[in-house]
Amino acid sequence: MKKNVGSVDKVIRFIIAIVAVYVAYKGMVASPWDYVLYAVGAIMVLTALSGRCPIFSIFGLNTCKVKEK
Image (cartoon, rainbow, N blue to C red; front, side, top):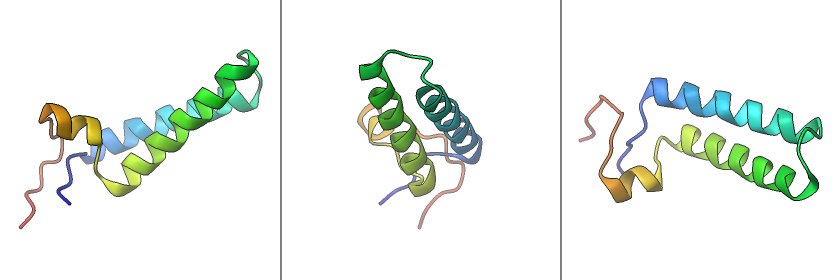
């Protein structure tokens, strides 16, 4: 699989994940939305760890500066 998520993008994704999970955990949103925030946090962490974002692939975006062989 080709990586399309750069290092700065990974850091931003981790920050979004932390904020989303924190807001959901503290109960700052109504009940159904906390599950959405947990899902957003999980997706952000998974895409940051894998270095690949399916939505970026669909639109042909790439923030990764290293070319794969």
